[in-house]
Structure formats: structure tokens, C-alpha cells
Image (cartoon, helix red, strand yellow):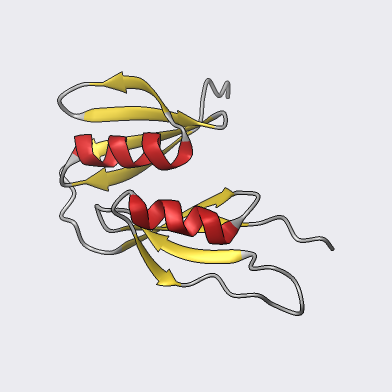
Amino acid sequence: MIIERVKYVIWAADKERAVRFYCTVFGGRVLKLNSAIAEVEIAGAVIGIHDGGEGKRTWTGLAFQVPDVVSGAKEVVAAGGLLSREPEPENGEPAHLAMCVDPEGNEFMLTRKRSQ
């Protein structure tokens, strides 16, 4: 089998709002935008944002590694997202995890590379 590309698809009740969120918070670049789906590239990965979402909370499995989880979490909230788990220091190290929700109800993680 020849794989041409891997894309992770999430759902949105308001596709344009979701595209703005992922472009604003993660520096995404719109590759495609039509009446049914948008494709946003973030750090070489493609997220498809499909119309028809119901706005319900849904775990996506998406994780975004950032240098500073605390400031990243603040950016998520400033762009209209929510935190379902605030970033907290662990074992004497800065926070390495924040559980987040985009404006469409899609849950994702912010992570920081651990020193060990």
C-alpha cells in the first residue's frame, strides 16, 4: 500500500471558527477550505476539520508539544478554548501537561518535553 498522506479529522459545528482557533493558537496554515471540510497544516501534520459537528465534548487524541505548557494554555483560553485540567508542576519540574478543549468541544493535550 502506498500512503500519500495522513490526516486526522475532527468535527465542528462552526468550521470557520475552528479554523481560526487552530490557525491562531498553533500557527496553522490553511491548505483547503470548502463547504464541507477544511485542512489545516500544523508543524507538518494535517488536521481535517469537517462540518457537521454537534459541539459535544469529544476526546480527539491530539497532542501538541510546546516549549511552555502554562503560556500555551493561556493562549488556548485567549482564543476561546477551555482548560479541563490546568497545567501543574510535577516532581519539581515545570508543568508538562494541560488538558484543553477547542471552541467546538474537541479535547486535546498540550505537552512539554520532559527533561528525563
